[in-house]
Length: 391
Ligand SMILES: Cc1cc2nc3c(=O)[nH]c(=O)nc-3n(C[C@H](O)[C@H](O)[C@H](O)COP(=O)(O)OP(=O)(O)OC[C@H]3O[C@@H](n4cnc5c(N)ncnc54)[C@H](O)[C@@H]3O)c2cc1C
Image 1 (tube, protein in one colour):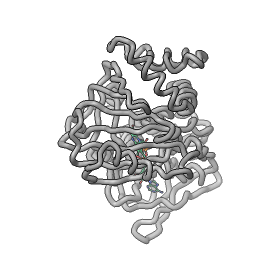
Image 2 (cartoon, protein in one colour):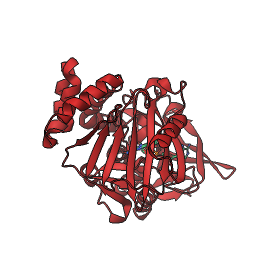
Image 3 (cartoon, rainbow, N blue to C red):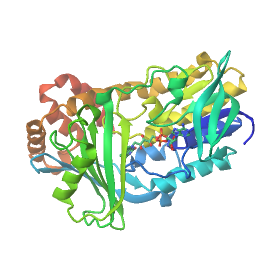
């Protein structure tokens, strides 16, 4: 580690490693700091991505993929099952390998990387953020830089230290619990989604097969309800009901900021990206692809700012403007749909399932499912058509 870099990135998740690689490819000297001892561990994720979104960002290596997914089954509270008609392919990744290799790709692009390096504060000077204070195995060091990029995930503090408001309202913080089981014998290429206000209030449950008898089984509920019953208790109920003999290989809990994006993503000498900036699809809780897309912009624009010797908030706001232009409207639409869907009661979910099951299989698409759901809320129909119809 050098005493000074152009750019320091806090957090080596998909956002941090992607931003680091882009910034190094743009000619900047870059340091990537990760507090955990190993990049990619622990995995707090169901690991699902769409093939279309990920392949637009990076050449997908076959060994990143645990399972190729070609089908989705939606489960209503009554037990009714709706097979979703979709032409899209998905993957359940192996994030231990995926995250690790994203960081390695950054290293090959020239990024310096340190693990067990906990950033505990920012350094400020008269112009704004000027570096980080990092605790490396008990040894506190100051490292100077021109730009800090906070890619420190849902637990982000970097933005707040620079004066940005990164608070996630309680109702928008999905609190999740998940196990990976080792004796799954369900359909190997189908992901399952469960809806019920009683079992998954303000959220949903999932079963994502990982191949070789493994599956990620979990749920997320709105933080607004987490005080009533903890997500891990609800998951135990679900496992008792559906997988009473599950052999549990891992157990994780975590949060997803299913909120509107933060109101400001840059300050003088500072940018935030990924979960830290709430760049998650608020309807699905998926943040791997969206955080990497944002990180590509952030890394590129950070390197350009270094080259132009202007790291003011005004210069760095090119990143925020580009992100809002490309993603802002879409995220706002997903947020409106999320508010509607996660307020439906179990009778409504059952009614939607029964309506869609009357359609011929090829018509059981996302658009038609939302059409059935939105009969009482036609104002959202335009959002649905824009979001799903052209895919
Ligand atoms: C249970 C669960 C299931 C999910 N399932 C999916 C899914 O199926 N598909 C999907 O697309 N998304 C899913 N997500 C969301 C997805 O995991 C995140 O959106 C994604 O990881 C965001 O990437 P990131 O790089 O912004 O943050 P993260 O991946 O969280 O990375 C942040 C990194 O910063 C490090 N860090 C934090 N603070 C510091 C510090 N002070 N100093 C140094 N390092 C620090 C952390 O250790 C971490 O490695 C799920 C989330 C949860 C909790």
